[in-house]
Amino acid sequence: MSHFDVLIVGAGQSGAQAALSLRQGGFAGSIALVGEEADAPYERPPLSKDYLAGDKEAARLLLRPLDFWAARQIELRLGQRVETVDAAAHSVTTAAGDTIGYGTLIWAAGGHPRALPLPGGDLPGVHAIRTRADVDALRAELLTATHIVIIGGGYVGLEAAAVLNKAGKSVTVLEAQDRVLARVAGVAVSRFYEDEHRAHGVDVRTGVSIEALIEANGRVAAVRTSTGDLAADIVIVGIGIVPAVAALAAAGAVTSNGVEVDDHCRTSLPDVFAIGDCAHHANAFADGAGIRLESVQNAIDQAKTVAGVILHSPAPYHAVPWFWSNQYDLKLQTIGLSAGHDATVTRGDPASRSWSLVYLRGGAVIALDCVNMARDFVQGRALVERRARIDPGLLAQAGVPLKEMTG
Image 1: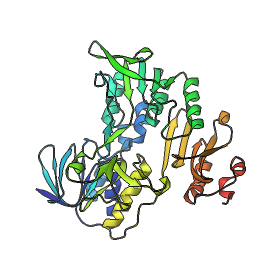
Image 2: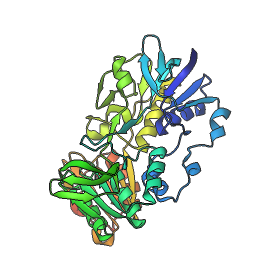
Image 3: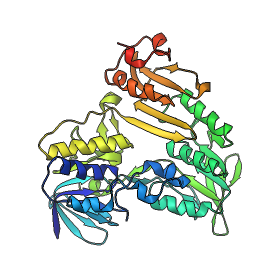
Image 4: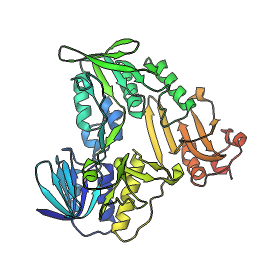
């Protein structure tokens, strides 16, 4: 049985950052990264954008060149899935039956795409966008496909819609809720993006009930909805992920929507941390409510938090959440968490395609969505951090920089 001082399960953004931060901080012990995919650590955000479009090659997705890891004595064990965790023995076992011991375990396994729980949901021609292999398979089929149906109007679904529309495909987006981006943005932002996609020729349908996927000639051919069937050469399902925490739960860890961690990313198991998409934590910018964040920011900052603990320089996780999405020539940048807002202020004219929506709760600024407004995104951070109370009339004056506002 092999043994490592720090064993990291998950070779994505969070797992890779944890290893990097440990080495950058002077950690001299042994480190291994175990990844379910065959690829070395790479960026995920471009998968639904530049990589799907063919504008970014696979080699440019890599977080570091392949030889970087060996040079820093970080062992990569790729194409291996960890199936069980023995917390008492401080070991894990892979699907191949290999047992690996650890001093400290960092669980950064992320999650897997949520499957469509309907008849036909597993037909050939039904795709997710989560891994590079997912997109490679999708791109191969796109060569002969015309009609694309995307189920889910979140970031990934809308980004894919923009890319495929630009590629000349007939694209329909189906969203069960009454607007796209309903979980992450306010009504004004949702309507703006619905209008943008429709203006580009995408058929955006909200409040849609899907009943089944229909097969013909051994693959998906249509999507059956409550109002009729839609032809589909390819169906892309983007309805979220299921956090990969079953092995931790079986080992006795406390789990809910992910694995529960404290403010230093510790799980309830001894010497086991969890970070990234699978970690459910109390977030100060959600008023201390439990939340699971799927973002590069969260992956990096939680990894740094754990590295600090291991390096005997602990600091609790306290990072302002931020996100971004590229669709057409629009860059949406979000700072803070808008859930629970009770008022909004619009800065600029949405018709200009350069504007911001400021979210307030109890009069305090809690988040901003900035569309082609990088200055507001950068300057708005300070307002979110201090929960600034600014007169809404002043906030609405787009010509007044946010950095000049006090409150």
